[in-house]
Length: 99
Length: 197
Image (tube, rainbow over all chains, first blue to last red; front, side, top):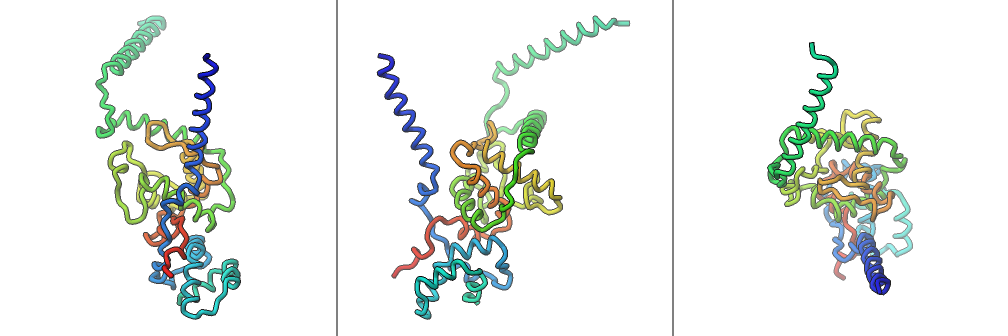
């Protein structure tokens, strides 16, 4: 009788542990994910930006698609493959777009 | 002249009286345990010294990754910091929250530079390499193990060491970030989704 009661309790405890672990998955945070405000980068002082600085590089990674999207809308000359090429390239190319 | 035996007897009696007095005080419930009443100086010193010595000893052997200062770590750690830590430890442009006001001890403002608050942390000016490494080890240990009765949880049971190192990497740069930089680095969303076409 005790064993019969024990198994549902164990199952519930295991489920609890599984769900609590799942809640800490980054994907769970995507529900309320905020988009990066890449427009703010355009107002920053570009002369003070160091492209070797990991902070700058991280911002470029976050806003790369956004910035190329802007370029596409103005020049209509980039295709998806060149966009991917730029992702692997240095941040300096992207900074030039901004100047 | 009192003998050694008399001295030991006196010491024993004084110790027993001290222990009984401490026990009575604990059971009397007279100590104000509410978070809105600060510790007295003795309690504060005892707890702070206990905490700092314990962390320093436990964190001293932690191996710091060579690649801590990378953009990938900043992006991964920044998003986690914003979701898990910013409520208590603040973000650029925010000076206080319900947690910084209500918790005791008040959570450290990790947006402040090391020079602007009491203890040292990585990236502070005037720190040599050993002090800087000790500060980084300290941050990793605290995030992973938490601190008893302080409101700081242990993130180790639910987060990998690598994920915790990403947060430590982000903390090294957090005091230098502007509000705009923080927003961009910590967003999990996709930038292109902001466009309506």
